[in-house]
Image (cartoon, rainbow, N blue to C red; front, side):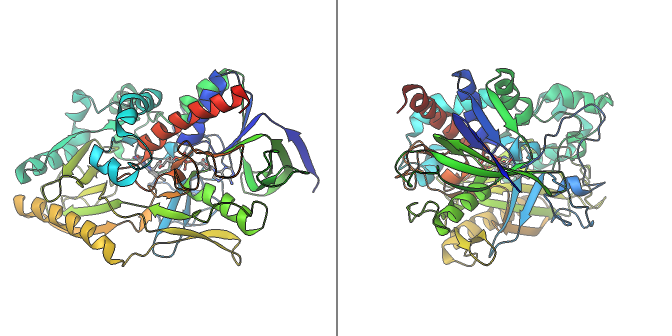
Amino acid sequence: MVREQHRADVVIVGSGYGGAVTALRLAEAGVDTVLLERGRRWPVDGSGTTFATQTAPDGRAAWLSRSSPLTDAELDVYCGVLEFVPGDGMNLLAGAGVGGASLASNGTMCLPSEELFAHTLGAVLDYREMVERWYPQARELIGCAPIPDDVYESSFYRSARSFADQLERAGIPWSKVDLAVDWDAVREEMTGARVRSHVDGLNVFGVNSGAQLSLDRTLLARAEASGRLDVRPLSTVTEIGPADGTAPGDGGGYRVDYDRIDERGEIVSRHRIVTPRLVLAAGTLGTNRILLRARATGALPGLPAALGSRVGNSEVITARTGMAENNPRQGGPCAIIAQDGKDDPARPVSLLNFPWPDAPAGEGWITTIGSVPAPALGVFRYDPDRDDAVLSWPVDDPAFAGARASITRTLDRLDEANPGSRTAFSRIGTTGGNVVGGVPLGTVTDDVGRVAGHPGLYVIDGSLLPGTGVPPALTVTAVAARSARHLVGDVTTGA
Ligand SMILES: Cc1cc2nc3c(=O)[nH]c(=O)nc-3n(C[C@H](O)[C@H](O)[C@H](O)COP(=O)(O)OP(=O)(O)OC[C@H]3O[C@@H](n4cnc5c(N)ncnc54)[C@H](O)[C@@H]3O)c2cc1C
């Protein structure tokens, strides 16, 4: 197949939080940018049927796969919203589509405490600067807000209120969490004016009501409206390297090879773009794949040795049962966050109640997703047999013992304070959408994401972070906003 060639001032790969913030800031600065995204657009058109749901799963739930870990159904092969990749010790869930993981996420936007930040990014970034400037900017860009009282008090959110009561009995502090949710749209779900999605806990394959403030409807829409941003969906980047006639690291620009695919993943056409500035924002999985492959194939052999390292996942999933009935539908997404720092105030356990739409009725289940600070011991390596990056996670490493003990103590406290309640399930960091790292900020890149020894090559996404101790999207966005400012400076000054 002939490869069509063209040029662009800036190319971004991936349209999640990192790519969307970068695209918007470049558009505002008047810079023409091409954004390549492997997934399709997901317009919420009012029909209530844009996405698959947990109750009616189909190929729209999974990225080019017959199965998804979140449903037992056999699926048709389609470019759905979530890729599942089994790993060694940890499985990965990654978003796919214009808007990245924001399409299907719980949308919780959590600010790490200063102590948590110190354990993860404190050596590279100044917490004060982040809190005073970049976190507020991230919240404003995403447009997040906590659940309003009238929605919280409705029957749909009985499980959140029930969890809050249990936390109070156990003496564990809780608060409402910021969410990337349009609460007026949720109110319309409640009255039946829109299809029920969030209030029925149906978000993990996308939100049919339009109540999700996903990036395609916010930052990317603003950037595209400027006329400066050219988003190319169904465009999978397969390889990057130095522009023809240049050597890696000499600043002569990059070639980006990508395939246009159809919705079943078949290649329709092949393309090459040449650009002086290439921003990788393909998410933790996507960016590690592209860079590790470029190093292994010799396209960019000088990429730093630390590439692939410091992969973190502090995610904890728990399920407790045996309590009073609390509404099996469990309206979502996660409305409240508990932060238990009783044993180690500097490293609190966070728990966010999240919906389990088909929880068995009458058994009083409360499910939570949360975080417990854990060391970033995961490593991505290039596997030549699979021609892919493979993640290893030393799940039995003694370094996780402290994190496991913390979560067990919190659950024990909850069960003791709430007679009848027992923990049915508690799992730390073995399957995750919150996995970050592999391109450590300040090591593989400088402190704004410029890749060491590779002028014009940037990484601006979750792969820069070695973990945050709370769900990462707000921090990914805040760090991206900071990096994008420097990128815009580089482009406009020709640095
Ligand atoms: C189901 C789920 C729920 C989550 N819920 C929360 C939550 O409630 N709160 C929270 O803080 N965090 C949550 N997260 C994590 C959060 O969404 C991610 O940390 C965040 O989206 C990372 O942003 P990013 O910019 O790194 O990339 P992503 O959002 O992962 O986007 C990367 C994009 O790059 C594209 N891409 C990848 N490879 C290629 C390629 N080769 N060519 C072209 N495009 C490519 C992908 O299709 C994707 O659209 C959740 C994640 C998942 C999967």
